[in-house]
Amino acid sequence: MALTATALQDAVVQASQMFGSFENRMSEYGALQAFVDNAAMLFPAGVLSAARKSPVQPVKIPMLQRGTAPEITSRTCTITGQDPTSEFVTLVWGTTGFEIKIVKAMNAGNYIDDVSSFAMQLANGMRTVLAKLDTAGYNALELNKATGLVDTKLSGITNGAGFYQITDAIKTYQSIPAIMAINDIPGNLLNIASEQAKASLLGMMTFGANNQQNQAGLLGALPGAMGYKNYFSNRVLNADGMVETHYLVPAGMIGMFTWNGYEAKNNVTTSTGKKFYLMDDPILGLTWDVLEISDCATDVNYQRVVADVYQFNIDYAYLTAYTSEDTDPAATKTPIVKIQVPIAGGN
Image 1 (cartoon, helix red, strand yellow):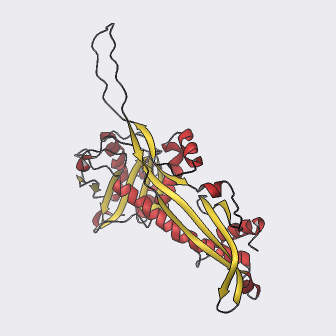
Image 2 (cartoon, rainbow, N blue to C red; image 1 turned 60 degrees about the horizontal axis):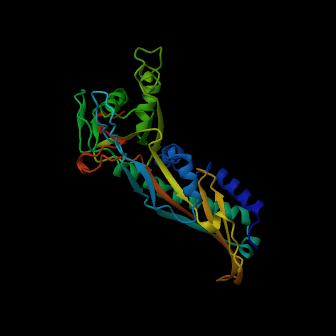
Image 3 (cartoon, one colour; image 1 turned 90 degrees about the vertical axis):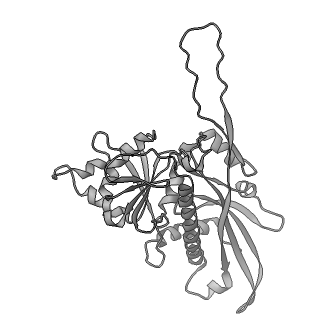
């Protein structure tokens, strides 16, 4: 017999508590977390709710295009108007997951019980898939970054192919408001960065208001400065010769969309005892669909045993704010601005 609902919940709780130990340590999944945190702001709630309830994966989402309205210079009795232009955004889906196996006969004679075994396998599975999802988030940022960046004459900043390179890490935060403004990208910013960017950020935070230069004010306290929500990840990679990589994005301009299978959403149990249901993970709270099967199996030590196997799956699509200004790959306008800091100018 498979784990009861209560035992499953105990295993989830135990898995969440395991991550404090070195053996079960987790990484920091900043790219993934940023997409998860901002998904609800990227699309209207009704669109998200309807898509998640759909029995099949949504393939396209309708979007209205940005345009230039013709100016009128006089009052007239004839009004022509302008029809809005729309386009469908195609969702590109990926699937990831992991499996857990519990053999009661094996655990019965072991110091590790069924709940602990399930918790450990859940932790191992989450570590694997979260790293993959985090990498996918980084790839989405890199793929969808703006390439048509406005040239700047600010000191110490050069334009690269789809990025700005800033010679001084501290100057990064000083320059970001101006960089985003000349590209017409307003809003509170997400700073999704490589892990080593923490050093310069911490250095700035230690220079408070009573110091000779209030560098901490650059992080949002001074007029004209921008507030940042910072996300860090080892999957955000530095190019050769670089010590920091940043992706600056206004809040609500990125999101990860998830979908679960019809059977799991409706708690289906087949005539042969296969069970489908949903389970939230203890790390990011993502909802996974689970297939649970309890059946006879062979084992090298026990010959014939009952094995309880669980398959966790989630379908995901990474989305960025829609842009109609993407016809030229070398001059694409998106809300994602990449900044690099070379080793010589790092923290």
